[in-house]
Length: 175
Image 1 (cartoon, rainbow, N blue to C red):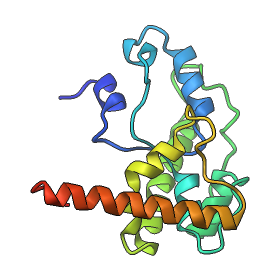
Image 2: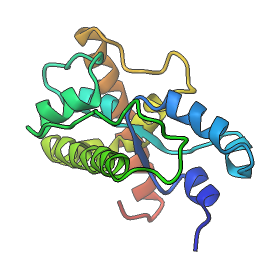
Image 3: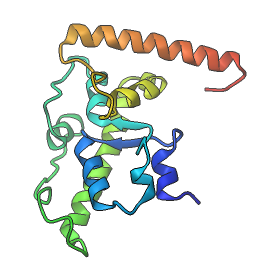
Image 4: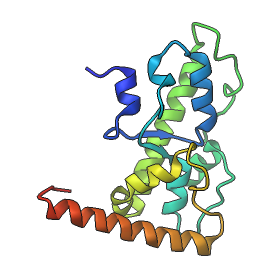
């Protein structure tokens, strides 16, 4: 059995989020007693689903969209954000807040799956690099907004991922 700290710091378990720098700050402030949130790095293998969707998009969709807009665009579903600004410090959480949190998590997973399927699995080979790009603590590492630069960056990432996969396979590993 893994502790929350083990899960958060594991390189083997990818954590999905959406522009989650603020969420990490709030988690640290809300749970200062948790040793795993005081550690550095706090969370490993973060995948920003917004960055992932941008990487999977042929027309390099705008990065200045929220989860509700991305959900509508990728999945075709309406995601209510009514509870977003409710009082999350009050316990117990209301049923509407729990439903909101569950819907956010569900749609993050669904968008992730759709992006991987759209790329014919190619994004899985790049997941380590995408997690690094999506880490809000790494300044200057996010995908650029201009499509020309984004295409160049994706080509570099693909080459790096292919090199890693080749090295892994040559070492007897199975992808």
